[in-house]
Image 1 (cartoon, rainbow, N blue to C red):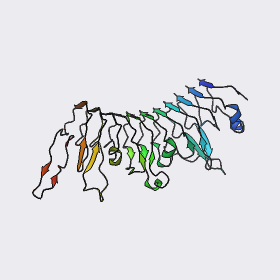
Image 2 (tube, helix red, strand yellow):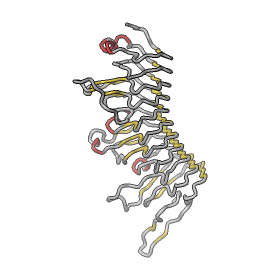
Image 3 (tube, rainbow, N blue to C red):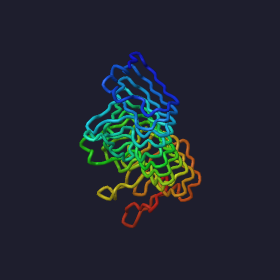
Length: 334
């Protein structure tokens, strides 16, 4: 089967188990080398699809695939690279638990997924946009060992994934590999994630930088306790919009781990923040629970709605020994 000039492919309402047969793996390069857009809609797929390589594929959309549990498969020692993929959208695939299925080479048996959308067997060096919605088996989007392969990502939206617990996992044993890696992320939207515990699990502490973020929108994440680790919040020179709505957030920035820096006042300089909207956060007590100072020189729009535990303004007090006294729950503007 050969479609040497195929550039766009849409598959809809197909009652099949596999779209690509395993035998296509050896000829996929020449068969699909010009394909740039792939869209699969309302397909009754029962198992993973076997995909070898689409070297020119730029966008992928998977939508309303009720039985899909994986998009492509690979053996343990193989990595699939989508070299030119720029946009990926996955909507309403409730049984998807991993983008790539991994198999043992000897027994050809699937290795159980940990609920990570991606792992280190797939690479998207040019991916700029990722939108995920209605994928209830996912527990995590980016485990630590894949973060460096998504440094071009600019727009991330995760919506209505009922089991998702974390977005970015940071493991410090990756430090030597990912030292001072700067991401291109501009916009982050977290919507209706009832089990989300962390946007960033663990503080990157200089391993990864997210300094190009301009917009952060968080809506109905009921058990999320904080939005940023301290090292990320300290380095957001381009952040212009921060909106948090209907969440269980207790503090916007989580406290640094106990150690040498725990007694030092942390400086947060949000030089470009233009709009801050905090709506119906009944547990919010403070911006940051430790000693700190904040600067908001460009803040133009401030909305605080039903944040009963949050004190808005405060002053620094001088103790008898001349030291600054910081309250247990510092106010928003301190």
